Image 1: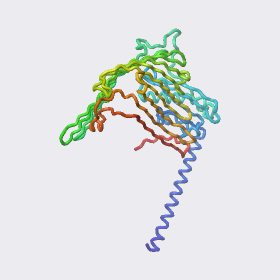
Image 2: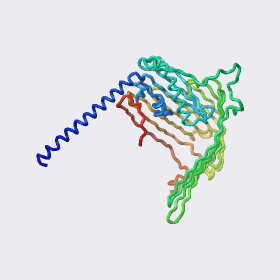
Image 3: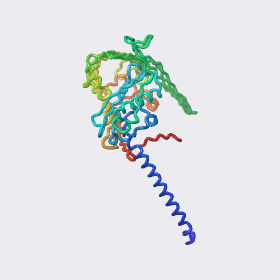
Image 4: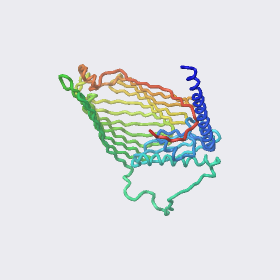
Length: 427
């Protein structure tokens, strides 16, 4: 390149550099102005797996939604559990931080099975807005605060709050079904799942009944033959639980099923159980540690003769189950340990362990881990004979194993702007 051409491009480079610098200065000024305009807003960390955060940002736009609890003035921790109406009961914990330390409250929100997704997210958004009022009232935004209650009618004294008509006596019913078809020129898969269920939940009783049917068919077109595999599982599960005290519960399970994969033609069991909760059951939203002991009788009939040369047998067994569930500002932990055995031979036993955790270590850094381990010594249902390579590759039949396990781990670290309240869904 000649000296003249180099000199001719120099002004363009200077103009380009000045333009970029100017744009950065303007962007910084706009960002600073935006930050300053929202300096009076409360910084809120919403810890909710079931909330539509973008919808919340749009509807409640007078809060700064920060990316980490350490940056927040208020931590909103939302837990939920299924309720007796087929929906969910949400517990919203408002935890004051920094200058609001010690200012905390709990609000509740209940949904039913008939509520749409929009109704649920609108209800949660409304409750979060209501819960923020005590904190907003301690800021300069209190001058802009308007409290209004609409569509209020005084209830006549003695008038029942129960809607007119039969309320189904707290029973909830469900009928469901799904199916899928995947097909290629040499392969076809058909999956069908359908069933029905019923639940009744009150303060004293919990009754559950579920009937489920599962059908899996796979057809593979080979050069010389057509291979067809079929797996079926039909099951009925019933449970009755009675609240005894704030810490004790008693109940029983009933389970009837057939499973072609596990060589089960028909299995029926009846299992009484007793459970103790270390914390009162009313704290289940935040923390739960329970120990359950169960003992029961199972009648099993097999499709093929087992490795113990049996086509049917009666089995008496027991199990001890420890369950842990924590949902706290520092994160969540779920896990459990189960130990079981048959009475006729204590060497026929099983030990299971599983966990799932998401814990905040320091500002912006979270550790995520999950896993399971099963020590298996109770496969009484295994069929006689060798498993063909075809059945093994197509997962047609359960095979003998001493254990099964799986683990996963990861880290998540977020940093950058303290908050960003903008919602942009383009492209």
